[in-house]
Amino acid sequence: MGWKEAAEPVLTRMPAVRRPEGHVPFKRKLAWTAGILVLYFFLTNISLLGSAEGATDIFGEFRSILAGEQGSLMQVGIGPIVTASIVLQLLGGANLLGLDTDDPRDQVLYQGLQKLLVVIMTALTALPMVFAGGFLPAQQSLTLGGLEFGHTQVQTLMFAQIFVGGILILYMDEVVSKWGIGSGIGLFIIASVSQRLVTGFIQPDAGGFFYDWYRIITGQVEIGSIVAGDGLYTLLLQDGHIIALLTTLLIFGIVVYAESVRVEIPLSHARVKGARGRFPVKLIYASVLPMILVRALQANIQFMGQILNSQWAGMPAALGTYTDGQPTGGFFYYFAPIYSPDDWMWWTGAVTQEAWQVLIRISIDLTFMVIGGAIFAIFWVETTNMGPKATARQIQNSGMQIPGFRQNVGVIEKVMERYIPQVTVIGGALVGLLAVWANMLGTIGGVTGTGLLLAVSITYKLYEEIAEEQMMEMHPMMREMFGRE
Image (cartoon, rainbow, N blue to C red; front, side):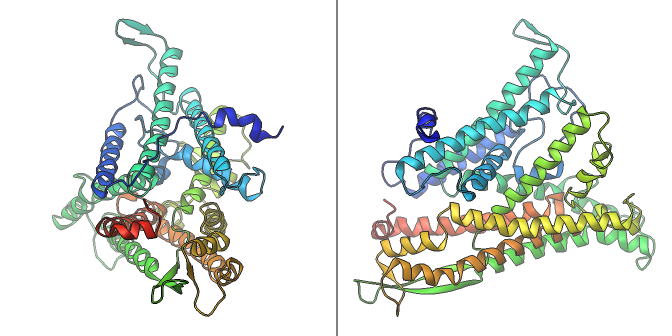
């Protein structure tokens, strides 16, 4: 008996959100999406019961892309979902699962396995946060409803809250995917990044763009001579935020432009004369979502470093040295992403490491993001049925064909192989390069380059999906043509 037969009773019984039986009207989809978004913001503002002061945010700069909130029910964010996706993509890429996603039975098993992995990853992420290293310190005692809880019991209560929050976000994502517009993961990332971006502009204290410029104009910030090194540095990279503002605007412009760059393959209907269309192969064909997988992998590496540092008093310096909870040397330092200009501009005095150490860290981060972006883009395309073979089958099933070629799946697949693999690799590498560049120059609100790339790209795709849904709503026959009933 294979693993599928053994695991089927468990995987097929994993709770799931029921799919709609018929067409869901656009307004109802919009209502479901808005409702889940409100619920997400509500849950991010519920603090963990029993938590004490002095918490350390393990994920730190990864918060904007993991769509969580430190010290709340959404503590783990979409981290477990992304980690489970990485594991499944790696297993699927190595063909170790033996699942055919075209087979309805295997589809159910795949979805059940993904949910089971998310549950496991949520528990494995929450356990060390609460019980190891004081990352989320618990109160020594807690009185609740007349009951007295000891320290260990309070820790267990906190773990249960984080675990429930992780499961809630899993099913909130499923509700949006089946009953709303787009995906829940994308929606939560947009919400998290947008909140940090708006806060970065208007927060009424040091760090807010408008507030800092008010301090500069009123003379509260001493910039000296503009041409002097300190004054120019202050305006460009510190209180002036000029470079961060320009980077933010450029990322918006570049992503929107890149989304519009495409190779359009002409199509014609095999039986309906005059019915023509085009299949667009975009420059960012795999979207920016594979970047979540790359950054999540880096986040997990740093997570392991934090745990080892807190639990292993004699950890070798070659593995990692830490100051104030941040890696300053060794393996975990070199594999830590560049978060801001202060992480690599050694000539300003903000970095304590030698220039060669900083250059090694930049090189590793750049290599990790560019090559990782290309690899995960390929995995993403293959596992989401966007590859040449799956695309050719979809075109064939819709009754379309490429003019000048025989109406054959193999022929269409060969044409798609000329474009899709190359564009996927180029697009994934380009997105990785943009993410590192944006991080190195900084962004408004410190949302990180990856977070900003994700937010802009997902928003653009959400706009396209909304436009498509409205078109389907106005022209019901199009739903039948595209099988959207």
